[in-house]
Image 1 (cartoon, rainbow, N blue to C red):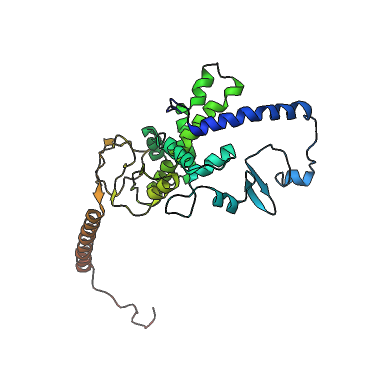
Image 2: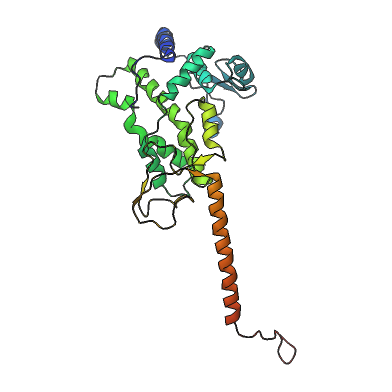
Length: 313
């Protein structure tokens, strides 16, 4: 994606070292053992979704049907025990786990924090991504929204740009793919939290906290309570433009009467102010309903008996 760093990061340098050391092994396997049969497949396995069929080459993870998944040869408890922990927490850094998956090496705390800082510099989500999400019908499935947001950022792809220039060699394709992966991973927490709160938390949003790690920031933005909320707190320009027919219902903090096309500045609304506003609307509605009931009762004709003169209904 477009925000490609100017200098190589420690993770990228380590990954480049691993790739260059691994290439001779792959070339030898392909040259000397290309015709070696590694598995037999029957009709039942094909119909059953290729169950127990070995047909991929990977050094990152392996899923054993009895033991479970292993990451770089380690079980989940072994992996969690080895990775550096977030200060004051029982769980490891997501950044450290990602470093481990890519390189096969257990990172130090400094290496995990370097990935954290790298993602922090790539985390800004383009404004048009939120416009794409808000243009979708509100009952769209969250994963459909998530996919649409990711696909809309294709124009930011470093790989697409370099591939379109026609000078990208096959042996160098890992470089722009790495950049796209890092850019995308850095943006996913804010996108996922925005979708969740737009659909299920009254379209109120929590701004990201750049001081938190990847997992902590995601949990922060997903939280159901916040001191201040805005309808677009996590965007840069703090404005929103919508059109009739493409925009879902406006957040509860906005005015009920708007023109078909509008640009609404986002203003922080405190929890106490929201509570007072809700209570005021409730009192007005209840008073109005009592008046309506009295008018309705006065206009009704006298109530007739439910039985006829013969005693039958």
